[in-house]
Length: 151
Length: 370
Image 1 (cartoon, chains in turn orange, cyan):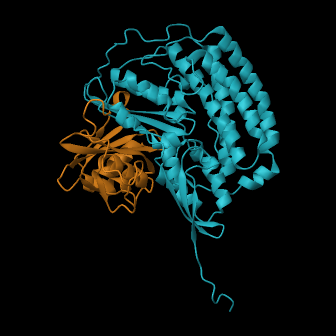
Image 2 (cartoon, chains in turn cyan, purple):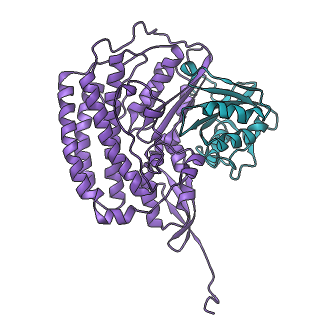
Image 3 (cartoon, one colour):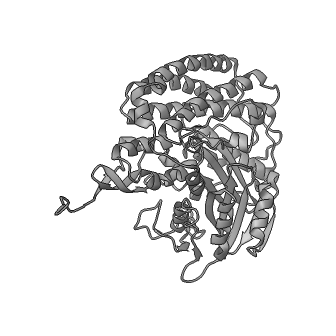
């Protein structure tokens, strides 16, 4: 079973949480909580097990961000979600990139930077993806467009 | 020695943002060495409307019409993915007849999407006639879908808990006639295109994608299956009424442009089989779940729901904080991952082949830009 293999592979990484998900309720077979700094190692472990990166996004929780990574496999049904909490700092939030492991993450990380302003250290080409180059805002931050009629 | 004095130079060629082969507003900045590409960088975002931001500012029902405008060619798959994600959050169950109707309509929509692709793709490659055939067939289909859903393109039909309108006799006889008609047309497509030696020479061995690349870039849909990986959400992660039907997942063997073409052609026949079975087994009963609340206030939590659109995996990720409005919606769109591989596949190909490769991925730009 891929799920057991993933659990074994992730066990050595000293992660905050690796547990079974409630598939019927959430669509996840495996739920993982990691620190942003552990993500390159987690991504490498996922790639070694043949998983692909389904999606990478962020959620603005006002006090902090959560980076959300979804992984799945072409061979066996096993969706893994990895949550990585990221503190908001005055100089801007930053997490290491996983684009050297999954080149497909390159665009996802650029999108997160574009929409949330989260920087990815070591990213080869971190510039805006969807918004114009000269935009000076990050639209998915919760304090963006808060005035009525401005959405 | 003859290379003395010859200075090697590359130049930049701008493909798009307005170009017939980009099917939308996509720009590709190409670094050229003569006719060969040394670097390709897609520039996207020209059609960014902020769907995900809109989602946070309206309630669950109000976001439904947006789903017809992300991927306009296979809008019903997006309807389905979003509805299923919200139903999962709410714990709603769709009645069996409702699921069957969803499958029939989504599969018809998948065929219409593939027909547009075939016509437009062959047009890209310089064959003018096929688009006239494909659009003729598609017109038939749109009339059928229009009859039930009330629109020709940007469908907003599924509701949380089922579908609002039942199929009628005219739709069912019309669909059966369409299945017969399209099957006879497949023979025309085969002799005109699939066995056409010009087309084969143009597409065989071009734009190869390996399994390893597919994993690293997260490809899905026919673009992935052309490379021989039988990954289709309808089989891999069965949803709705799909487990009730017998159908196959066509795959390619070489992973080139021709294989991706063939996968789509074969997929249409499989969709016809699904529709036929669904019409034959159509159960009686309600089409909407009982007691769907008017004010939707799902409990706090998050869900991820994947469905197979004509281009690959559409994933709907919803975070709820127990509010009337979703806290965050992320739309995982297949074309996004499928296009991100272009810089790697395009290197060392001819600029004319880039058009063949780009078309074979079947990107829908509004879906990427969101």
